[in-house]
Every structure is written in structure tokens, then in C-alpha cells.
Image (cartoon, rainbow, N blue to C red; front, side, top):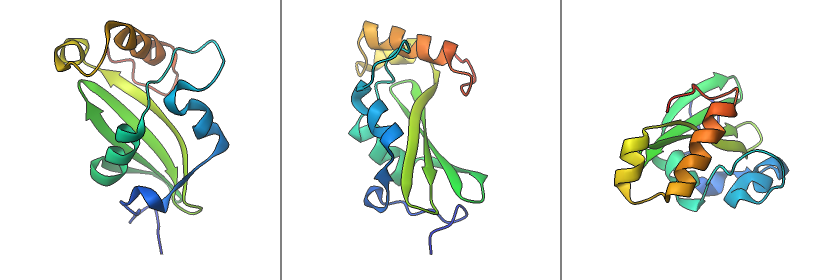
Length: 122
């Protein structure tokens, strides 16, 4: 049985919540900048990311992509991806990586700066 102490590391073990699908690939309308969350980020966070037990049923998967660190929040009790978002950015590494456009880097920086869950790293 899957638990927060031993979460499945296979992306197919999880289905997205409605909240998550609204934010995936920046498909939502509000005043927040895009998160630039994609399939690679989701899959890699689950398969290879660092795992933190947030509470008895929730884990955070964390991985870095071209200088941008993402957190994926998963409810292992029901097998759902709840949300995902960038939590820190090394702007120089992001620019040097070639993965992100200048506009994406600025979006991510703004998202982190205005998100109360992130640590505010720039």
C-alpha cells in the first residue's frame, strides 16, 4: 500500500486533480504569472525527485530543471497530484541552461516572488 513514507515513484500511479489540470501547461486565467509546468517536470519530480513527507498522506517531490526547482504536491492516500509550482530559481543557471526563454524566467521569478509557499529565492 502506498504511504507518504513510501510513495510510488511511477507517474501513472497518480491522477491529476481539477486544480492541477488548471495549472498544467499554464492553462488557467488569473492574475498569477505562468508556472511553466510540463510533462517532463511532473514525471521527473515523481521518478527522480527528492521526497519530503509533508503530512501522513501528502508528499512533496522536488527536482531542479535548468536552474529552476519545482515542487509537486501529491496526496498518496488517493493517488492524486494536487499541484505543482516553482519554489526557487538560480537566474544565471536558468539563462545559461537554454531550457527557458527570457520571458519564462521572468514569469517564474515573478511567480516565486508573489507565492507565499515558495522560499523567495531568485
